[in-house]
Length: 196
Length: 220
Image (cartoon, rainbow over all chains, first blue to last red; front, side, top):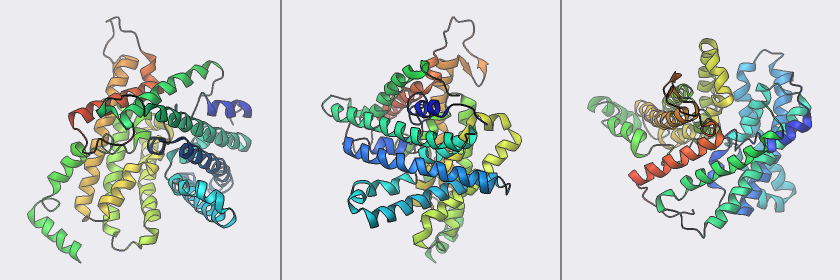
């Protein structure tokens, strides 16, 4: 069992071990959906929500169903199925009970199934042998960290609209370079606490 | 029915209906999945701190893409449209699990180093993208070839990024101390996350200059 305090995991997954800037996960939607701040916030909120609950569900399934049955090798396919089912369920639920929220978040939900950060969070949880409380805070922290990164990027890209970027560097090229610099600044937090 | 005819014709006129070479070239160079379509970037960056890791990951992608292409293409007329996506995900996950179990059994250290990134091939957009865009419309052999081509294109980019990062960040290449005794200082930045993003950024810039994309508009 991993004995890292819950609070350390929570803060580390937002700053020093940011799932996007240090773990490279969720790049695809990060590159595509970081054009505008409100889109970025919407997607970030949806990712945080789904990540929190899927890590919790996957933890329970992994430890109470797969391990007793010795079916750990099926975990990947189960995890992705849980994520897909959960997203579908949330979409239906939100559409039925809060149309307003559905219009704000609904368009992002289908994108989330293929967001590797969500599956990545579940895999890291198993790999680092977190317990339930640690997994919950890891899921929440990673979601917030991802949302923070995409919101920062969207803010920078809105400003970048006014600057003269070389034509061939536009699009993914410049976003990569800027992400590199953001990742560098986030490394400054590394002295604060450590997570292997 | 028509696909059957195509396939028979394909066997007659050369590998993959005479389109084999074209498909292979397209996947590796012309519409390289990473640099032109910017798909599958996630795992591309994580495993490139060492060339060895990048090559294993490239091999995994070639295997998964080829097998998924083949199976999806064989099943393409039997898959109901509504559950097509989930079927494809299940097929992809099966091959990823196979590869992962293989690594664990024979190359445990490598499997430890790659961590969760082998499993993350499941959500790698390249695999899904090729299955959806190519394998559902083409005969099995050609789809398999397309998978191999895209996998090789992916592996090539991974290897290029990894060569830069391993030499600059560690002074070695495939573990050999290439720059020992030259007074070279390891630049840790390239072994860590920022180096990956910056190398990838420059590589995309370089390749876009060599081979300009058709549409240069789009936000900065």
